[in-house]
Image (cartoon, rainbow, N blue to C red; front, side, top):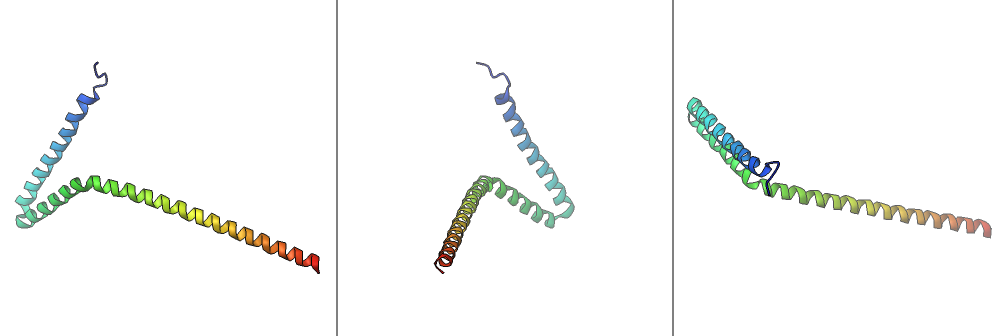
Length: 109
């Protein structure tokens, strides 16, 4: 069976081309910075390269941490809402009991 929209064929070369283009741009700009700025340029290029490598390496872990944080935050919010609802219920029952006792006292007097 033929893939009619060619997504399997067309997607991967484009992805790889973007990666290669980004690497070439980084190398060209790094060479320019090192040529113009000498040793400070070397240090800057190394720091930027390390930053890019760490961002690429930890990208999946950061996404997972964000998802876990979102789930945890939603759970905390729902727990807080449940606690507030319980407190409102207790207050309403306490007020109702207080009014009931007042009415009973008025009837007894």
